[in-house]
Length: 288
Image 1 (tube, rainbow, N blue to C red):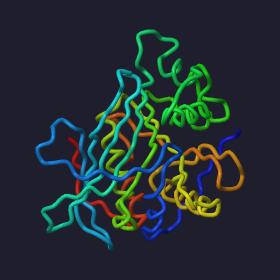
Image 2 (image 1 turned 180 degrees about the vertical axis):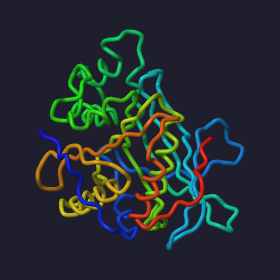
Image 3 (image 1 turned 60 degrees about the horizontal axis):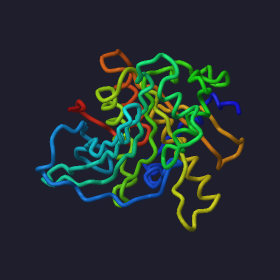
């Protein structure tokens, strides 16, 4: 299985690609309703980020919060359910508009040099279940059983030879908040937040696909994948692997996020990415 080294050409979008993106599950689990916003007296200490959004569709402040973090006692793997919120300019109420499901894999965790826990448990083990099955499948497409980048993907070695992998299993916006540039804004905030939460450089990994719901057809899935590829390309992702020549098929897209404190082009890239989907983020992002 050879990777597709060239991403699909980005298109000039009007924000409507996000309609498809917002209803998508990246090859993991089933869609679930977004819970209502938490009360104001919720526990402090969560990682949060925010940015001002000002485009032709909407003006206000978008926030992302890492809320429900679970490791199940396994320190090399963390499951994060993050909420996406929005407060319209002039409105005192902050509304929960969507969410992320993330899996954070610490590739450096472990006392012995070999095999690292992520290698032994995600690349070599024959038993895994739930969302981790999709994570393992994606990792095994890119890394061999020793944790080295597979030769076919050597061109992406710089992006794959990192300390942490963040697998984005789900991104969702509620229907009434789609098509307004909030998906690209949320992705940009997420990219800014992760270095303060993770160790070292980060490999971002996702599988663009549609929700498994009754009535979804192959034609619908193809259209969703095409829209998602444009959306994520605009967010700085590259198509790393395409199983078949024709869509719909198994896809992997990814990008690298540099460690906190390293110089990079993230701010410039974020500005360009958001403008390509008719979204503007103005002012400095706030991460706490």
